[in-house]
Length: 335
Image (cartoon, rainbow, N blue to C red; front, side):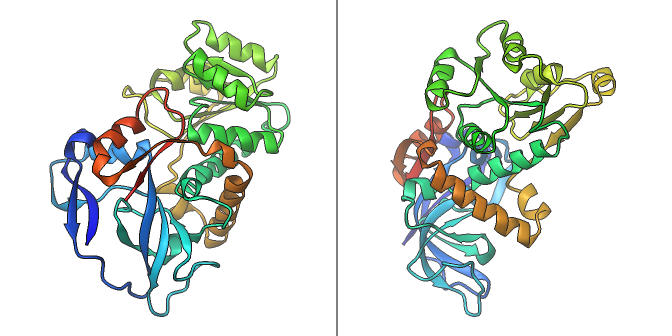
């Protein structure tokens, strides 16, 4: 039997998610790969569609976008990525409906896992590293970035934030990290002692950022929060600066007066790794980005923290933990 996580209406994930049992999936068709799941991450972004789902679903909906597992079968005549074979370990992204013991995936989304990586890292090998790659590319498009300008990122203690820091250090980019609490700042300083960290619990945190920049311009800001935080970042940006928004943690909208955008010639850019990357990138770019994501996972393995691991029967606890303030690392579920 196959146990699958589903919901039929919107609401709190802990309340509306449930498990159903059904027969194992049929043999994969051309262009498909059958995967037996060994672990999947609970990304905060997985939960937003559940909370905002409108009305009642005609059929049960399975959440999830990323999972790692073992290939059980490959559809006839299917072209697969190098290293993908029956019995081999793979990670799949983006794969809607991956919160299941078994699932049939689009072959283009299936990537072989390096032998050196345990399941705990393999389960988060693509979504977050590819987000870091996407954000680095957005930052590098700014003419001053990498030369004179500073990069500022909020939620720097998050899984993505730590990878962005590691990538920035590798490429010798000037970076200032911003976190919510001094406790989080202290933890981040231990990981990356050479990167300035500012805590927003300090009333004058924006001036601390300016001081850390030492008079150099803040050219690019990366922000998954939105709301008032995004407005504060706009104030920090130098003329010609760029704000990249890639998350929706804050409930309130971003409020920026048009005069600020016009007078400072600012650019506001929204990015979404789930829908944007597959549709915007060419096959060659996707292959290159996936290879880079693997290298990030291999080089920064110690940054792929796991906050906790749960079973399928502990879903309510898992989704509550995934959004818990102060959490460090990804919450994993092992079917």
